[in-house]
Image 1 (cartoon, rainbow, N blue to C red):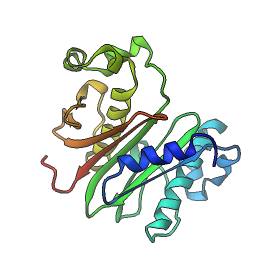
Image 2 (image 1 turned 120 degrees about the horizontal axis):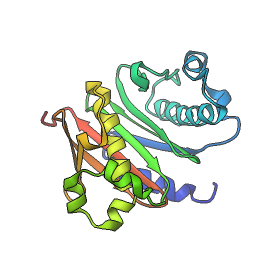
Image 3 (image 1 turned 120 degrees about the vertical axis):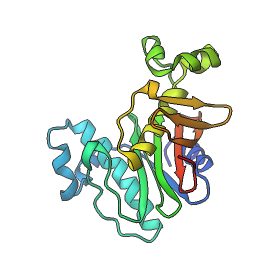
Image 4 (image 1 turned 60 degrees about the vertical axis):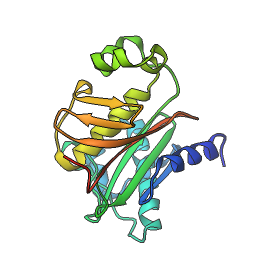
Length: 213
């Protein structure tokens, strides 16, 4: 196990409620060659680093699918850049420069799932106003706004709602309440948000089948 692997695994496990499986992989040279034939066309014009990150994330996802009793099949990019999952599954992929992560759940329990990972370094100051709404800038202390917690949470919320609604949102279309651990979108989605801040920043957003629209 590489340095930090056990802490990463523990952080991801802490995020996942019953019915959700998470996993991670340290991105490794050669992961770009693990993309399957049904997946590679979408990355034909991508640089090797992007193919490597995408291959690593799909390796994680295929292991999760196998652990849930499903085949390790292809996970091609769908319309809009999202991942096409087996019909019985909702899932999400993410990566930073070093770590790839994935989360999956049964579609009978969840209609949307989003995951994100970010390094534990400050958000560039010029991005704070772009990411945080005026309400969030009033609500949260500078240390929160300068971290990547809101950024990661909003990325996760976006992915969860896009899986079900296919609506493109900007950062200001999403409001995150870190006290209630909820995310609300301008399109009317209200969902649970979970965050872990060590050794990286991880965020998971979940739309349960019985969540109010």
